[in-house]
Image (tube, helix red, strand yellow):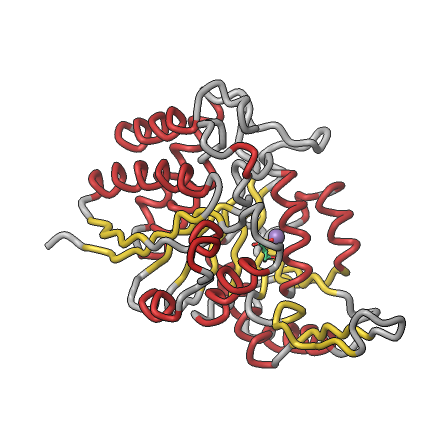
Amino acid sequence: MAKTYDVAVIPGDGTGPEVVAEGIKVLNAVSKRFGFTLNYTYYNVGGEHYLKTGETMPEAVLTDLRRFRAIYLGAIGHPGVTPGILEKEVLLRTRFELDQYINLRPVKLYKGVDTPLKNKGPEDIDFVVVRENTEGLYAGAGGVLRKGTKDEVAVQESINTRKGVERCIRFAFDLTRKRNKKKMLTLCGKTNVLTYAFNLWERTFYEVAKEYPDIKTEYVHVDATCMWMVKNPEWFDVIVTDNMFGDIITDLGAMIQGGMGIACGGNINPEGVSMFEPIGGSAPKYTGKNVINPLAAILAGGMMLEYLGEEEAGRLVEQAVQEAVDKEIPSLEAGKMGRGTKEIGDLIEQYVSTL
Ligand code: IPM
Ligand code: MN
């Protein structure tokens, strides 16, 4: 019996539906080749839906999402909706409620892709950021007093639990071992200023490290991490960090690997339902023009296959993208790819069918 995987699809806003359509095109081609089936259920969630109905993430949808093996997400974000609402109630809520405690973001420069870093190539830029995804400053703890007055007080607290920190660090050690590259895990933090939070991180890191004698460890402050990511990205193999720092350094990571057009990520619950997405947003100005780059969404689809256990199929998607960017796509920027969104999808579909 051929395997079937139930996948929830949230195309979302702006260019989300366009890039998801290309991702599905490729996923269908690759699943056909490997003889498994992806059974999609589409959900209409996002800015458009919110403006029409006032609903952000309906309770029933969130409950429903729990029964899938994975979620494939396009983008959430709408120019007509106050910033913060959709982010908090759709994206962050899903991450939290489904306990997707890892945000996995590979930073890999493919051959033939331009990086803004001078004298750096694919052999220098190949690492993964493991970002804690359910705690820290994102937990929403805090409050405001005397709002709107001269005496206003705003507090935003970073929540770090031993359990949350430890499971993230363990995931990062396991991944470093599995990658089997430099076998080096870097903890990125700010122990010199955030003396409570990163003391917990650092102690946990070195305690867990004892169980992984084959993995080298180092600690780097977040500011220095930014510096090294630009100056010596080849030093990194796997970086583990908290939610906020992970958010920031992965935008820097996306830039050095060739831009938002190619950067993908997974919101992972290793025991539950994980969600895969291109890191870039809904790009309203490019919407409906067939110019947005779908490669990040396509790669997110490949990452999803790996997590579904179809590792070979996932690798083929990445290999297809690698070949295509090297041989046929002059630039990864929207509108400068030498082809439209759909045509890039067709190209990758062709590669995964014939490689
Ligand atoms: C990301 C995004 C989100 C985050 C926003 C949209 C809430 O920037 O996935 O990196 O901060 O996590
Ligand atoms: Mn971000």
